[in-house]
Length: 270
Image (cartoon, one colour):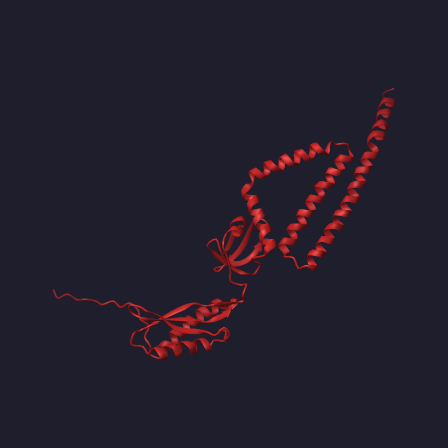
């Protein structure tokens, strides 16, 4: 009798839930296949439109999670679970998480804006939030820079997207701003010729835009020259340091003095 009772309950369970379970399995298989197809199609579209790699990963993950959540809700609905209550629980949980992670959501939104509007890209030399570095990676919540001294700099995307960004790589060329001072007894015309010769002899200095040399200031102890060569962005520091060194050598060779503080010793007779 006991066996017959359990057998009867088993058949009753199968007849009641068996079709729903089979349906749920079928929905999972078909839904998973459709999700893969959708993601594959979206990937092709992104590749054809040359989307940023970081943006592609983010959008694919977002679409994947949304579709999987919808698939799970469909399966639960097929099994007889009240999906409206389930959706309400998800909404309440999402609101609670959102309130707890306001800062993170701000960084998340900032990351989305950076990926969509593309004010920067990997490899750009930028200045932002008081830091200068080359963009190494743009993630969902943060952006990583490699600083000029090879240090890693991590900036929250919320701050980055809401602040000023100076992108030195956008135009492809940069002007190097240098100032050199010579003594008041120096010949201005000759000094300008020497400084210009230093610039034009450097192959990393661009001829278009042309470099310039001008008297910028009559200071207390020197005549200051504004020396402005142009270079490709990747040659900026080469031109900066090479010009500084070459100017010193050229002025010394021409006998033109670069003023520097002198200490005068006063000997008191005892």
